[in-house]
Image (tube, rainbow, N blue to C red):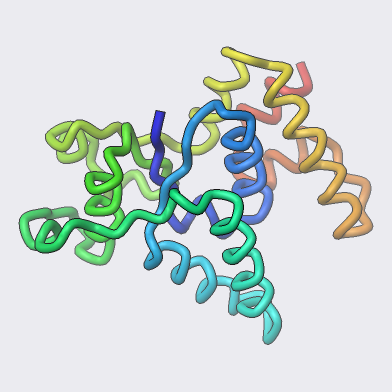
Length: 180
């Protein structure tokens, strides 16, 4: 299964680490475009002067880990597409160009299911997507989540628990499932 990751699910660190951690197990193949990765790097400016530089380093690591994941949109494709927010058309074009099965995004209103279905795509929010993987292979998602929590503790110096970290990362259903 090929899934295009929108910038809004790549930029939050815990969400990205969960999605890419599960992808690294072979559960699915992540896709993105150069423009999506650039949006991630620019969004990281919110973290302060070093945010963008750190994000660019992380972009390079992600590109090295998945060299075939970066999908250039087919020439002229964007011109025939429509979405409520024209700034998201590049995401849809990359998904189509990459033969994705779906788009993982937090931005439901700008990716109407009907429009995506016309292109053979589904829309998935990261919480539901990862919860589905948890139900299919709990041990895989548990291992990834434990590593993400351990890294969050190391980097923040805070004693995060699984449920609160996943809730903060806007994946509350996954957090609940991981602690039940």
